[in-house]
Length: 109
Image 1 (spheres, helix red, strand yellow):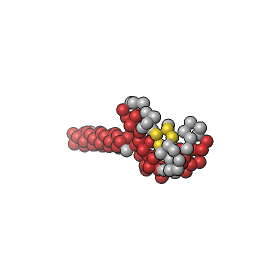
Image 2: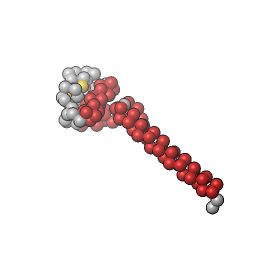
Image 3: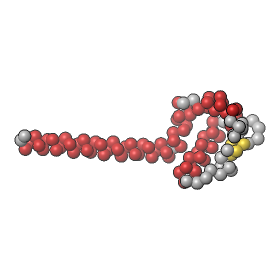
Image 4: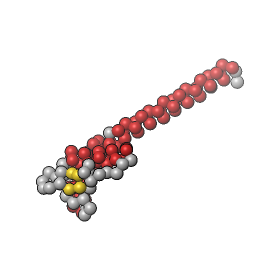
């Protein structure tokens, strides 16, 4: 192998290392961003049709009765309170996780 071929091989290896480093940093930044926006809950709400799932299975939940009657904004707010508790490693207080039904009195997690 010539000196030139060795230099080209080293340059190619360094390029792949740089690519891997940039890709790793981009992945970490994206993951951090996903955590900062409530685990992408607003995006996944539509994509996974979470609203329909809550409406379907909410009435069966005896622990949190009436949650299926909440508005989307309330669900996002309650989920945000849970995410904040995870981020700060604090317990979710019943007050911060209280929701307001669109019809009737409020409930609590």
